[in-house]
Length: 111
Length: 117
Image (cartoon, rainbow over all chains, first blue to last red; front, top):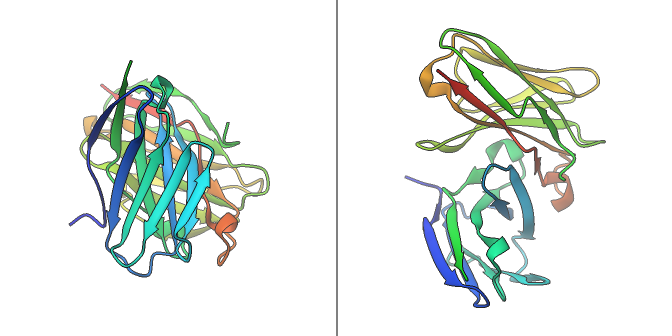
């Protein structure tokens, strides 16, 4: 089965908050990442969190990590139409060649 | 702009042909990774090179090969192409200094769209 799971779709209204969730199975995951992929573009690193952190905030982005439940979330405050993209959760231990990606959550922001 | 440069951006070729995708990593990054993104398989790790040496192999077909040159740029060679090889191929790079968050963070290029017809 999937090592990293995400719901495939999320739709929100402009100005609302978006919460994208991710679960992973490897308890030894050390680094967790959120990447954004806009249509026709590459993966852009949005933010990351180390496994000994519970929360990281960066402007409109808030990452929450529940290590006990192996649950990672990305909250986007005041979601804009430009936030429409696919968001990938990824995790790795110490070796990037073992980085595992979720299938991606397609966020649609409606005006 | 991640600092990782890939060429070509788009490529259309026929079945049975061979293509080479090129990648220049971020300045200072020693590791280069190749990923394949297709609709049915999602994002798949293919191979990693570190300072010119192959470090790890993922789901890379035998028809595919890669190398990293002394100037740290990398090439991914795809041969005997099949329709199913149509995908977006990403190169990524990192400093790859184990034990540090910044050292492990990888940055992706814009990708090379390969269409096999």
